[in-house]
Length: 161
Image (tube, rainbow, N blue to C red; front, side, top):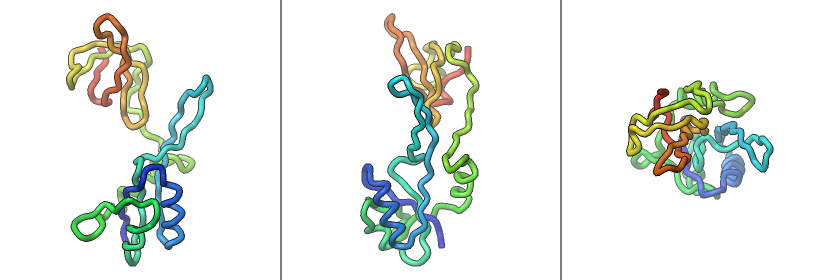
């Protein structure tokens, strides 16, 4: 018995979960708690942590999972599915709160804090911290050519000034 990873067809998560469940597979689709503003209201989105992928537990054979509706293919290691370590699944489950993954906040920068880009093609530019997106992306307002433009950067590519 081991965990494997399946690549799903676009927007077919529910179908794949249903069909794999009917075939006797234990599935795990970790979801991310994401809060957004939509039309002036704050809403909570429950998006997949790994869009387009899910984990399934293989007990006997994996062939039915490969040809299950909604599954594009299994992530393979040669001629057999790649094994996902049990510790990886356990770590993801430990970070869940009420069934949804809570990503840790790395930076405690307040919106409006002056920052400088340290890596990438925009290295050296200064701007204002505007917030953090899920999946560790930082939103920075950079002044380029006299206009303020929002830019998404990796979390490690900025520093407070």
